[in-house]
Amino acid sequence: MHSDQIVRTFTEYFEERGHRRITGSTLLPPPGDPVLFTTSGMHPLTPYLEGRPHPLGRRLVNVQRCLRTTDLDEVGDRTHLTVFEMLGSWSLGDYEGPSSLDWGFGLLTEGFGIDPGLLHATVFGGDDRTGPDTSSLELWQERGVPVELTVEDNWWSNGPTGPCGPDSEIFLWTGDTPPESTPTGDDRWVEVWNHVMMRHRRLDDGSLVPLPQRNVDTGLGLERLASLLQGRTSVFECDVFDPWRRRVPPLWQLDEPSLRLVCDHLRSAVVVIGDGVRPANTGRGYVLRRLVRRVLTVLRRDDPRRGLGDLPDELIRHTLDRFRQDVGQDVVRGVLLDEERRFGRLLERGRRILARPRFHGPLGEDDLHYLHDTHGLPRELVLSLRPE
Ligand code: SER
Picture (cartoon, rainbow, N blue to C red):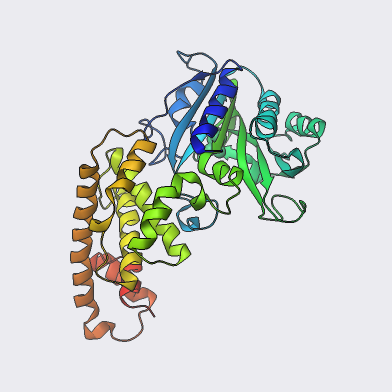
């Protein structure tokens, strides 16, 4: 099933159940949100989860682009991307968790044709403040889906304060053998869909108070589901990455982990630039800078002549179109090339500084801190110039 068809199937399924489709927002969260980027579909909906009536009603569905820097170091494994699309559904004080889970089960098994025997759920097992989520547990028991109870893994929050609640995650078995173990015990169980019973708010002092309404917030990563439904072993092999897989390897010969990193970070950088962010030393701009510099470091490790000037227009265009961004590809290319030049100058400076006698021996932690704090040379860059 092509990713566009997955989006259609998802949204139509919820529309048939009274949900109105809303337009996803940019990667920039609304003012006052504690995070730099939209990391999940609920961010733009925070005021409505907190009780403000939504103009389109109490049942919503959408596709939202998200960026997760917390997962940056996991990028390159088979399930994590920096920028991805999240399919989401919401009950704003309308139906409760079990209805959402039941529809989720129906959509996965009937809509997407997944064998119910390959599903496993996790449910919040309760802690000293909040009891176990027995209604989710009972729903899964009625559907014959095995359940694992956890505490931390089944509590979802948007940040240290704000709306939060217990969640129930649905996992799909990806092993070659019949399913075994549980989601926390075997990473062949891959999480596909999270349903959050968002009915609490965490205050500054850490205490929990009930939200004015009992919501459900669900999120399902599109590229991850697409790769599973398409029988691929990683998100980088789903149809969304087809043009990248076709165009990048002939251009730059890279091992698989480096290829994944380059495709992920460049695609993410294009989307971030498309949403108006520019490289900087702090905040969102720093995230963009890190993405571009990591790509350049990987590309130049094997061949210093490699550069972003060779990036095919098709990949920039395909990404901007995919994320429905109305920005010229020349603008994106201009930002990338500017950053590349700036990075080139930094590298030259780095080489000059590292040539000083003080740095001739092996570099210790103190040296790395000094090079960063005094000369603005990031650890990654120093290590790429002086692999120990
Ligand atoms: N907010 C939850 C998540 O991001 C469900 O959408 O996983």
